[in-house]
Image 1 (tube, helix red, strand yellow):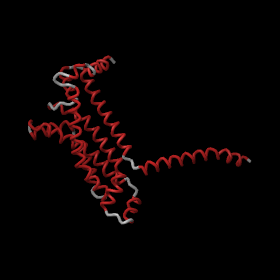
Image 2 (cartoon, one colour):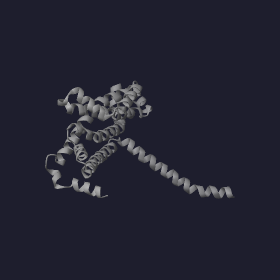
Image 3 (cartoon, one colour):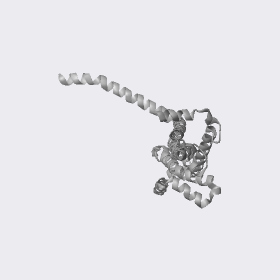
Image 4 (cartoon, one colour):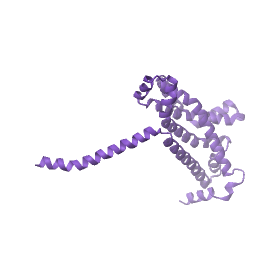
Length: 251
């Protein structure tokens, strides 16, 4: 427990606001790599996922690619890209690594969001004379947004946790405290850096949870509330009627 107290004392020390590696700058670097990587991954994965979900073709290929991407060790890929691109392109190597890490979750969220839609809703849109683009943008995309945001949420959490390895090649971020703590054998610094990464991930997770709830269409939210109310009424009615049935059987 003393180590945790020492870690929190290190985090809230006034020294963290100055020096060669101030905490605000490290957080900004960590968020910058996370944001850029997730945005690039989304620009790649979302259109592909929507195309798969809308047409129903290519799902097996997407699953295979996503599984292969998940199996790649991030640290090994980062070192390999640094060796291939050169030491002058370390930021690009890091971003490529994190993009590859984020794509599978975002891709899965994009196409499963469209696949989860009731086909009767899409058939009704076609019966009304909607074009395929209108069906995609007016029906499928709004209804599939919650699962897409869920995919973005999972991808962001994976990236924000992995960005710490960027410090190994001198790119800063919150991982620099963990690396320096390992080199100097300072356990309070190692634990403090890990706590900061975990806290940042929890904050981002909470923001995405709010966003995921906000993008649920009103009709679905109202329908869920109505269904819950109907189920509750049925349960109460069944509970009140059961004693009468028991008495009738006994007679």
